[in-house]
Image (cartoon, rainbow, N blue to C red; front, top):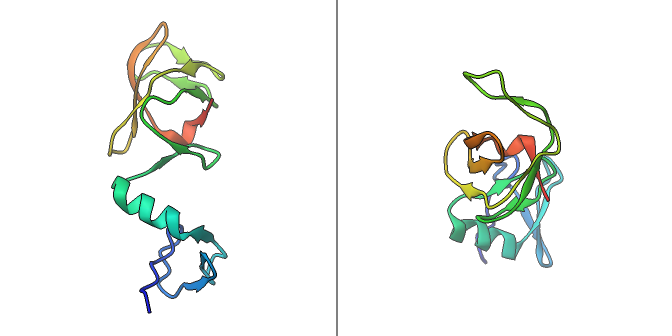
Length: 113
């Protein structure tokens, strides 16, 4: 019998397999076998505010006004950012925002465009 992985959402260890899905009885999360193997191959995954997986080169739009630290500038809601780069840190998106320049963003403040 194959070993069932921990829940990716709550890290509960007593999950079970139901046909081609894994199920967590603690938080009712369901995920596929393919999602588990893809996540382990990628090393880390970055998701936006809606839960969509982001990749290098994607375009995103900002969902909240963000103050730029050290200036009086603001990144407005709806600003579209093209060609993002993912990094493994607290601010996990490196990008160049039009009229502002290089910035690091948190993925919780963007959505996939």
